[in-house]
Image 1 (cartoon, one colour):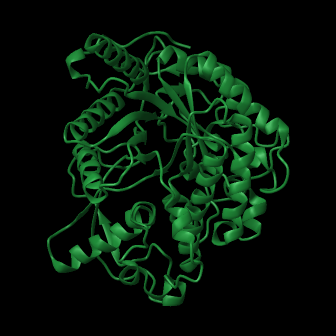
Image 2 (cartoon, one colour):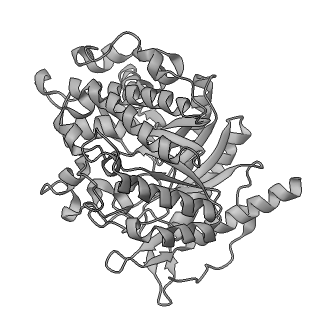
Image 3 (tube, one colour):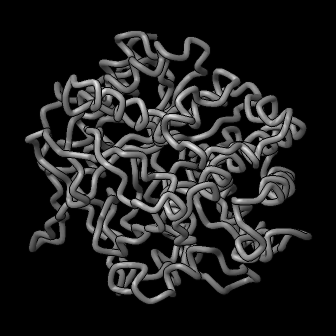
Length: 473
């Protein structure tokens, strides 16, 4: 592990945040844990998907990933050195209930017990995400998120986790990015379970929200005081002011944003459903009272942001309406930004981050406080002869996006914290191991961890903000 820091940066370029602002990093269970068949863990949809030929780049799987299951103490030590206030990790449902229902697998809970205690011993507050996409395969075999029973099973899973960890975990996140679970997984087929459906994907979106609502109730009953959900809302622009492109923008807003925010914060389904999905949005999966469950009050909203979208009107990709998926909404995406792109191909537009936050707070005056639960970039890191990892593009990305976040706070948006994605290079879902988001480099052959320049930069940012907070007192 290299301890070589980067050259001292210009500290005037470090944004300063209000006292009490939370700095953290984030990871997800399937992306880092490995140990896919140890201590009673059952298979998840991502085990099945990644082991299916052609589904992931290079046939990559999460079987080993970063071996965090065995090396978590080393990773907690990295967090301690980094100086973060909090660490966001997710619990793997198949470790707790190998078949998605039934009694808890004690060894699975024991792992998260050990991790939680290690974090607290290091002075790092755990923030737990209950679902980051690794649905037990047994539940998918019975219908997955298309069916209501999965939302009900999620409530029991939540109960098992909070009963074990609730005395030490202060912040709970029910779901991470349900858009990806419902639409990338059940409509586009690029993520597990790899389905390409219309009404099935919309049913999945609804049942994910219902699962969230059930989990909120269970967490409240257990005494949890900080409960929220993480959404990957998008800042979307129309390619032109033409009526057709403006209509495409409204459909895209419905698909990407309002399907989540309207039920959660306005207690209603999106008004643009019929225009966006037509007969696919038949509502057959809804019941009276669902909105009351979904709209339970929250203590915070987690928000993930990476890049903006620009959309224009387009014909349906599938001319046969019976085969149309829920993401085929007569919208085409374009890239007019003329800016640097990350290795994921995403444009780097920090000002869109400010715009998204300000617009969201204006649309929903009852919005709870925000935490940025993911923000970061995949970059082509360079390992220098002395072993240091130079990732100047990532440092610039983080600096500019944190400045954009600071601008949103100055504009009146109530943001309480920021979690950098990600602590470690990891399994980047269908993109395999070619995309590196970590501020710590992982050599996947040796599992050696090496803090990058961005790690040292982020540590200095935290130090400067703590010093500023002390001076204000």
